[in-house]
Length: 174
Image 1 (cartoon, rainbow, N blue to C red):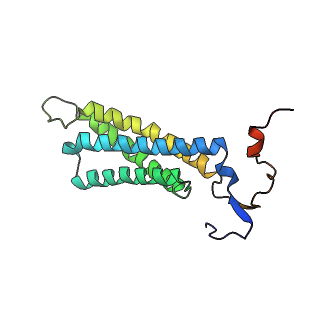
Image 2 (cartoon, rainbow, N blue to C red; image 1 turned 180 degrees about the vertical axis):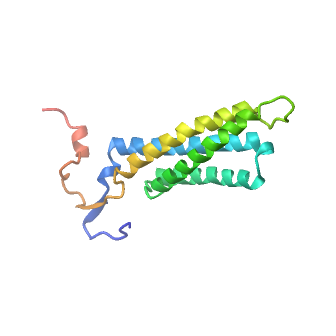
Image 3 (spheres, rainbow, N blue to C red; image 1 turned 45 degrees about the vertical axis):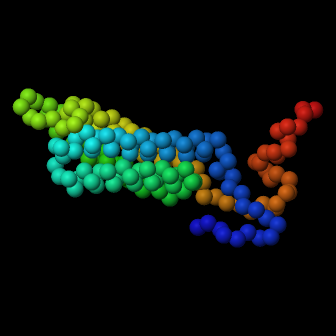
């Protein structure tokens, strides 16, 4: 729950969001979510003609859109979507593991091909599995970094323990 009001003379400080590790994790999680969405979209569009049902294709595109939405939320320091994204990634791993062999077995003479060759769609599905595993790992690392921690500190006061004084960066060394 975000605090909306701060005592007069104080400001909110989010110490864990200023760490380089947290910033890197946020960027990596967002990048992996976007990469997953792109992979899912390519797989669905490339194999649309041979998917079992149009409903599955539409649901998969919705899944990709959800990953993009989650990436935007993560870029805004929302860590609540990280476990949800991890759960969706785990389900996607199961779907991909079940679907990949079917695409490779369709690569035969006499069967009509979808937009992308069946072997390429199967390979993309296989590539999606480690990407989803990576998403689970980095999302849980980000979740454990406690981006939500807020502290009040006096406005204009000297830095508290663990903070860096912005004036000391440019100060000459003694």
